[in-house]
Length: 448
Ligand code: NDP
Image (cartoon, protein in one colour):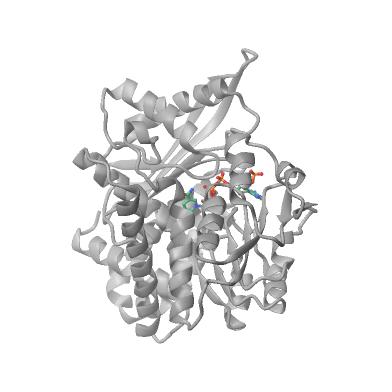
């Protein structure tokens, strides 16, 4: 049996009931097969792949907090410090009821390659909790965040592990966590990113993942003889990534016709009104029904079981920006049938493996999340640099660095795909380019 297959079997055996983690590892290892097989003896002797798929450290902890009725609630807390070969662990904190160890491990594993692709010195990590901030009062969210950090603060720091936002963790949650970290440690340091502008946050961090997604998509289209201007774009989600992806797409001259949340989706043939969407989602924290109520051209569709409405709409470019496995084979078929020619992932692993293969086989340009959504973590790393320098850069400075990073990422995965005889396969290109730097650093640092 080949080394790659052996290690994948080992991952399944040693990590039972973690299907998302298995899926992420399989996708990466399949792409790396050609690289691994060329160096099989050396990698096998050093157990390089076994070390790569095993987190350096996994923290699981209890998060007790008191709700507004005086009732004690208990959630599970997680931080997986996956790989620090090229820098301190860096990756977001997800707060969502679906969070479990397997989800955090899949996200942490992806983060290793994503962070490597940015060209910045950051290792891979991820964390979170099954706490659901939805429907909680500000005081309850604060109580949870303080309890979460009371445990986690022992293991993080500006030079060791720097968490950030993700689903359910926005500026409010980062603020409460930062305040508690500072209180417990007495340190005013860049330990969390996504901070508010008045206490060490970076301009353009809020916009970074969505903007970065569009910078990369624009470059991918340009290198394939196409232009984003004038194109129709379908977006899923209506959170941080989706909102700023829609905004930048429209600034680049495209028309965004869909957004969604976990209960429904909007089709707006006149183009999504981003200011209204921000008001509904960022200010009122309301459902998309409120968007539809305020805008004549918008149709609201309730989400039916197993149906992901946005992918059935006619579009040129699809940008999944909600959550994992939200675009399946049926959706991929609908996209191809409707003439969609490019998909770039704003979310982490939103496309199933079968859907990815179908899109690639049908000539759709496909860029995986670990490259396409790397703008968020890249700008987080820029926030770390500003915190270390005790300086703040202008929006334009950060935005232009972000654009440069996204364009470079696209070219590094395009080049890697070509170098290994898989031109146009950006999934393989991203995994290979991300892996080579990490593998080199791991080899150089000995058996640790
Ligand atoms: P938000 O919490 O701001 O928004 C998430 C959006 O996705 C919401 O519209 C939410 O709907 C929807 N959603 C979440 N879970 C589900 C689900 N199980 N089914 C259907 N819809 C769902 O998160 P972000 O925008 O920050 O993150 C979106 C994706 O992008 C995630 O995969 C995240 O890991 C990834 N990402 C985020 C980065 C960032 O900088 N924020 C960086 C890189 C990747 P509802 O409001 O109803 O819950």
